[in-house]
Amino acid sequence: MNIFLVRLLTLCILATFVTCDPHAVPHKKVYNRKTKLVENAAGTPRGECPNDQYTGSGMVTSPNFPSNYGNGDSCAYFLTAPLGYVIQVQFITFTTEACCDFLYIYDGPSPIISPLLVRLAGSNLAKTVYSSSTRWMSMQFTSDQTNNMQGFQANFSSIDTAIPCNRDVVIAMDAHSTLGTEANYRKQIDFVSNTLVANWTVGPTGIQVGPTLYAQDEATEYFLNDAKSVADLQTIINGFRKQSINGQTLDSMEVAFELVTSGVDVPTNGAEAGWRLGVQRVLVMFLSFPPNNDADLQAAKVYTDKIISQGTTIVLVGLNSNVNVTQMIPLSSGPNFVFGVSDVSQLNAAFATSISSALCQIATQSN
Image 1 (cartoon, rainbow, N blue to C red):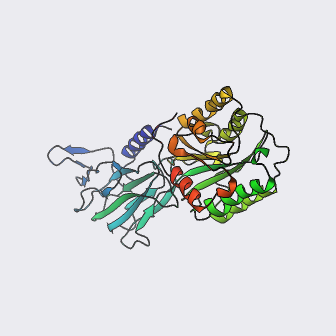
Image 2: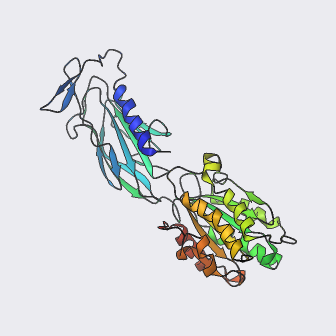
Image 3: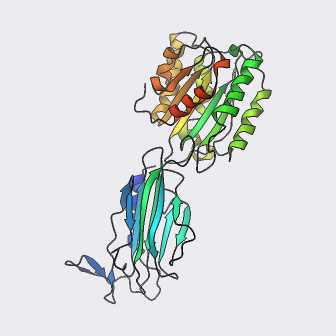
């Protein structure tokens, strides 16, 4: 989706519909070159909209603030946080005509495609701080033809609202016999459930996690929005303990990565799988096997290159001495995104912290 075009369309729509007052005469306007204000048919100034594009942190205000806003105002505000952050808005001042002059706040890049967070009017705000669930927030201010007031002033900032960070993450766990024993397999599952994700802020406005279990020729996948809390997520992951690795021999690394990356292919799955627009995507893949040969490694790389090109970060975790961490770097988002242990008994809290830190990084290059 081209966000610039969506926002441009929004501005065109707002410029067309500047009033909801049935008694107004919106077709006759006069532009005053000296004051840079537009006058309606009755000669009342319309406020000049502030800048509509905002990034990082700063301040947004109503037209003409701290003076009163004008009649028939319709202004759009587009706020963007850096990748991996969300927008938080805190109001300092807010006074509008309660019946007729409104500020709409939307959870997304444009009022025409994003859900409404809140409509504000009057002077008594039940809540003065609002946060988006993605890196984008948009706002729309409208006024009618009477009773102008001071309007609003608000600070906005780019923040993290989740532990360890605001991400959409697929965690792919290995169910192949190369793990050695059923006990080793369950140690992997227990590590993910009880250590790695135990303190994460899981949910639609935090970190979303889609658990996946892949074996010989199939992958069991859950959507990112299936788990509404960390308890939901742990229940799903613990359900994988019933799987047996007996007879789950590895065909090739190519097949394994084909199975896992198919669930991370955003154009194929998209919103249905719970991927959020404007949130960094991450694949964390546990594996207990090496490639059959260099040709197998290169064949697997075709699949990883595809999802990296779509903006997904790949973190790889080797589970035993079969996995050469250095050999896995070309399949990941870089050297800082590959980890390994010589035995699953080494999976501990410190190792979980390293994985969490990696998935919160923004990969600057692909391999």
